[in-house]
Image (tube, helix red, strand yellow):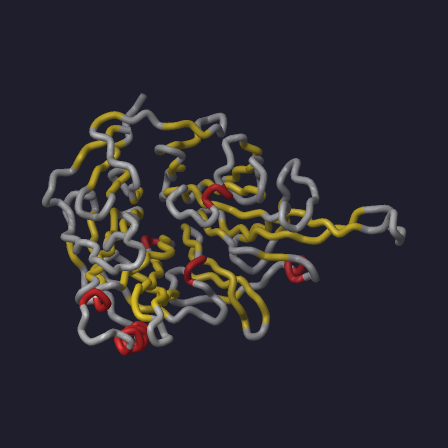
Length: 383
């Protein structure tokens, strides 16, 4: 991968972080970079005007601003309550709100779904107190990265864990009073499916499903009983859990698949989660284990020894930079899988970017930035 520093003036103008913005430890930024199959999107937040502007580029060099993302009624109420605690017109409080980028997913035909919220550092709800005011869960969809529409997701769906892929968007939600898997072609119109019966059994768990080109995969755990069946102080049945992966082409009919070599364990260590690397590759891992499995169809799983990838990424955005045809694992630098399913670091040359980056994987390459004001692009090279 050859890195090229993009000259100044070829990026959106990003307002600087102001004193009082939440999390000013060096990690706060007013720009959030994302990549997709048609280019790159950067969300630019102005803390003074409290406006959120999306910028889009097909190559990471030429950018166009979209329409300001509308403030929802939730935002209006949130800022009204926050400002009511603001001592006068002190800009240190008015400008202290930071936009926090959440989930960003791409579905069929380039349809996009994203979530976001706010953190404000200022006067608390109790007189004389200071705390963090947080609002999240707002979801938008777009077809071009420039125009975003506020969406009200169906009951039970958390927009922060919606997964997107060529098969559509998928998430856990509810169909009436019953838990269900819901799917959508565009993030706007949702169809309720069903959970596998075993996932609804007592003691079973179903976790956030993943979408990719081969369909949907639902991870979870099902209870199993071991022991000699007798009761007493020295013997008896012990409840353990088996990792479960269900595959579906449509989110309605499910088949149970298995991870080769995975043994029953306690509920904590049987916990399985899936990370989407690209639209043709997903990786499953068990909590507290370096054993992981890769699949391209959701039904056949092959053990790999490159981990931990999944639970290293758990709760840490940015470890996996998912792409359309090829995703990257950021393990100290960009890494990819070779023909032996081993994770290997890509050789890097050129003007390497600074550390502490945001990354967006798009059609031109791996776009990188610290604060949205300066970009580097890593272009794939042979050899």
